Image 1 (cartoon, rainbow, N blue to C red):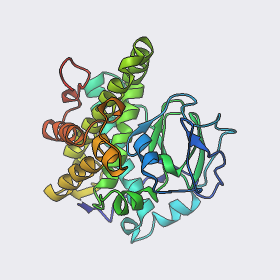
Image 2: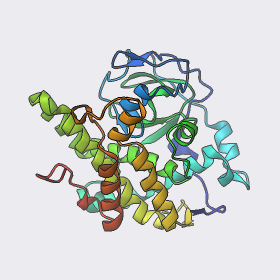
Image 3: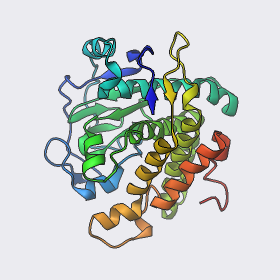
Image 4: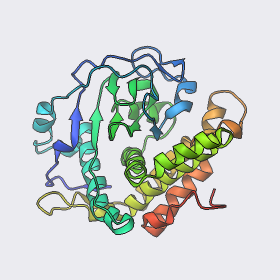
Length: 305
């Protein structure tokens, strides 16, 4: 993967709250998130790693007062000649590229204008429209405030503890989260929620379909990523290689429910799957990549999953 060092990085698509203090914290679903940061407890990772989405108050507490970030340092860092060497600037560029794709693809495939979503960079703890969270929940999308949330130190956990060190793991993670944004604004997420309420016994199976569709949307973006431009028409990516795509597939393999359950020392229990197996996550990322079209991502079709 080669990024264009001359491209303009649009930091307005980020809400940088890393120095705003956070607050909240606690746990998710009654399970404590320990240590004021990434703990490496696999049971925590099982809940939300790479691809969480939470409905209103799906996290702990009510989120408290709204927060606002300060992008001053991010703007300065991402205006430097060596900007693409910096983690926060590369991730901002990835967000730019993902949203640039959906600006064109969403109207084409869904018949409506795309509604941009900011990504929130936070450190340790954050308040959201879905409740309070800390870094242990991993990256997630909150449909209540239409924002993606990530503590960038998550990538160290992904590399060191889950065995997915490839650089392309990072845009894959973000593209998956923006897949949840697409599901939110298209109505898929709310429709799935209603189906879960009608038939609670199918709640986990429906969650798996939602997550696999987000993986497929990430694959569709990856196929088209080199077409993304900055505001002046300069390419954001110079190239994406077969190795990059393999890194995305390797990441998908490391974060399947079955693999994470095994890493946690337990037995594989399909009844507890919420994101899909490693093979399923790879399959649907590949489906999106091979077709390059969100239309191939109907995981809710009969027999698709």
